[in-house]
Structure formats: structure tokens, C-alpha cells
Image (cartoon, rainbow, N blue to C red):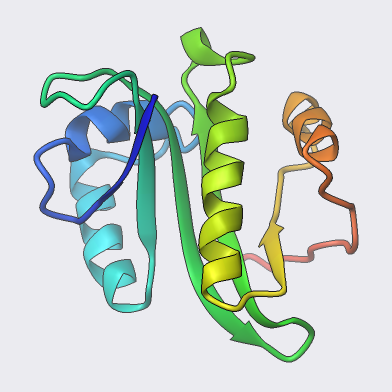
Length: 144
């Protein structure tokens, strides 16, 4: 496995996006490009796991993340998205992404990695609990 960060203009974005849409089905290449351009300026980054370090490598997993300052945690690494392609689940890809994000967070002086997970995503919840995440709060949202 090979983990790398992809900038908005990286030629592998389309390959990475094909994995991301397994989680974020509403994304299109155009909507993702617009979101990532705006998010890049706000610190949004995408790390991708490829099966090898070659230009034509297959993408196995993706994490969208950013480092934020907050009153409850100081600096934290917030995970917007974490997805492993269906064919690579339970093969260590998610664990490798979490380990990579943990090292980044420590290096950046973060005290925590935070993420939200939809209440219906039971398999993801089991994974996060195995990876020693704790359920620490409820997330509330109001549609506008």
C-alpha cells in the first residue's frame, strides 16, 4: 500500500473520486472539483491509499481531513470522509489511513482526531470502535 496526498489538480483525482463516491454518492466530478478548490483554502486535504506507487495504481481508500482549532480540544484533526472501496474492505486499508492520520495529528500538535459517522453506518461504527475511537457526543444538524 502507498498513501499520498492529492492536491486539487492531481491527475489521480478522478481515480480517487471513484472511491469517494462509494460514500458520497451525490458528488460529481464538477461538484467535487468546486468543493475541493474552496476547501483547499480552508485546509481540506485528501489522502489516498493506492495499491502501489505507480501512475496507473488502483485507489483502495480515501480520507478527507483538515486540522482545526476548537475550544474543546485545542488543535484537532477532523475527518470529513473515510472510505475504503468495497473490494478492499477488511484488508487493512482503513487501519492504514487511521494510522497515517494519527501520525499527522501528533506531528501537528493535535490532541484528538474527530469524525462524525451517520447513525445508519453500523459497519463503520464497529471499525471506529476497534480503532479505539470513543463515542463522545451527539451531532445535531438543521437543514437550511
